[in-house]
View 1 (cartoon, rainbow, N blue to C red):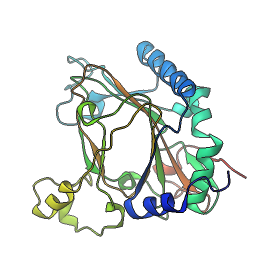
View 2 (view 1 turned 60 degrees about the vertical axis):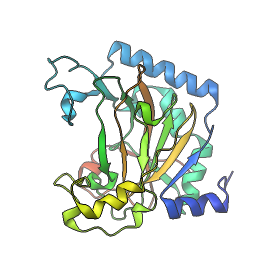
View 3 (view 1 turned 120 degrees about the vertical axis):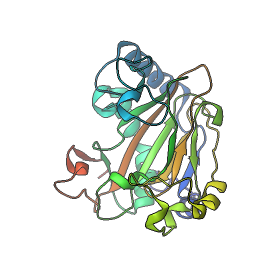
View 4 (view 1 turned 45 degrees about the horizontal axis):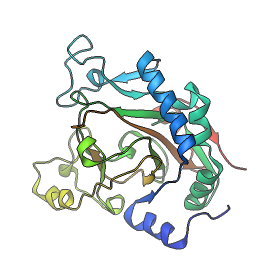
Length: 255
């Protein structure tokens, strides 16, 4: 299991900035994760983040407004249930990350470490952005691991990627104050045109680079979409002390 990814898969990740692994998680494990997620959503098990707290366009104006208690994510997934820990530390996944980093992998509990939920009606879209925009590490070489707990398509707000965008050098005027790509800037239009939205089946996994531009639309279906998301870095790329990235524990996952 030391090199579970093929050379072509490694090259795809380096070139495109993401890698889709179809059916990586077995149905029994995926169903357990979904059952825990649905239970915690139903009981509103803290900590949660609500759409009203994020404040993206179209979100409820406050927690007291209609849809204000629509959950955007179940936070602290690693800490909240062993089912999430088992997946996040899965030996095959850890071996893949070791292979891509070229060194032992660590999971950061400061970022992602959640189950993203996108509800019909009140689940808002997310513009084109890079995760590294608010992460503080010496090198922009982290990997986010996205597990689809159900079907994900453009209709219900699936992820979109701009392949190869982790290698781009952009001008400051292409970004807004929150480091999102500005839709009105002409130089960004060719980038948007390159966007792809791979459909995911339950149990599919996507690995994507922390510098890759990605986005997601609204959920126009009648079902809640749920995805477990964790972030990893190489052992030598520890978070910068005193920053948000160093605020929670880092855990080395292989010897």
